[in-house]
Image 1 (cartoon, rainbow, N blue to C red):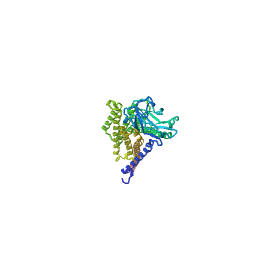
Image 2 (cartoon, rainbow, N blue to C red; image 1 turned 90 degrees about the horizontal axis):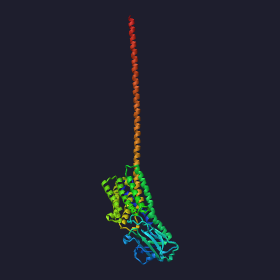
Image 3 (cartoon, rainbow, N blue to C red; image 1 turned 60 degrees about the horizontal axis):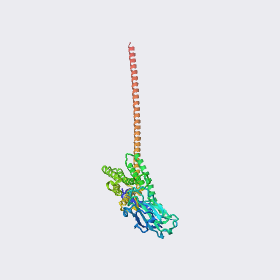
Image 4 (cartoon, rainbow, N blue to C red; image 1 turned 180 degrees about the horizontal axis):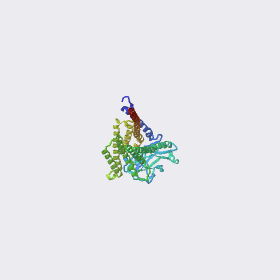
Length: 474
């Protein structure tokens, strides 16, 4: 083994895996973290006064009302019973630096109305939208808001900023820092964050569906190996979660969409465990039956947690903990098999599993309330890297089966050709033997005929001689 490929050695594979993990972390930094950075060259409002409850209009909300709140302000911690309120701030001269300017809210988890000098300049969504959501962690409603300020508002005279907010459930509101600055700067920051939080997930989901369809085709072509079907179901479940996670406008109720988004992500982890078992050739029947029983029962609980006296958030936290433990189990299974399975000696395997584990742990901490909610859920960002790695392993498995089948086919063809050659040789020998036998029979017949003919002539001659002697005697 000392003279083999260094990638086949444990130290070489470990070094390659570390380098790939560092490259993946650098890619995440470049393609995501840099896109969601705060805008440079804009005035940041990191604290505002907050007055809970409704009001007849912005003029009825005094600038000195309420209490000072630091931004981001997460109502799950600071106002668990509040569903509506007003944020107000006096704007200094430093807020206005350009003729074309705007207001940027990178983190807002509520319906908003933005007022400048008591004049409404923007709404983020209609207040008559459905308001039957109960789980603020289920889907991505934390989208940025950018408002270009109308030209008729002279920045030198704008002093009062009021933001009317309304959450869909008490305590689910979230507002991050507010930025005021040049339109070119803030619109670019808004576009980058929207691309990172929304557009990227849409592109990732489309790619996931492509991989799922490919795996479905492979399963159809090789149904005796069920790992392709399980992996396809895994990817379909993850893609289904992403579709509803983005908060698409569908005729379904918000609670049902929340339920599908949460349940689909948990079932993705369940299917990951089943796929791991099939790939490694394991058949823990009792364990899988237990996993199925827990997954089905808690999926039903998530549909109506009030039956058990639980809130949607509490039920989601139990489900997320179950998913984290089960996902850790699957990754541990792969890690244990990594040292002795030749097909797992891929330096991308451990970084891919580590990406799922790290981002999954981040999302679990966020759902448990142990991580700031303004960062948003992140696990879907590891999908391209992770799914491509494991899909390539399954493609290699499928191509290995094809290579084996081709090798067996060539070997069979060689055996058939060899048997054909042997049969031809035997047939030639048989023909030669038959020819020799025919020749011998003909020779024997000829000799017999000749012998019979000569004998007949001799007998005739003998008879004639005897007849002649008899005549002489007479």
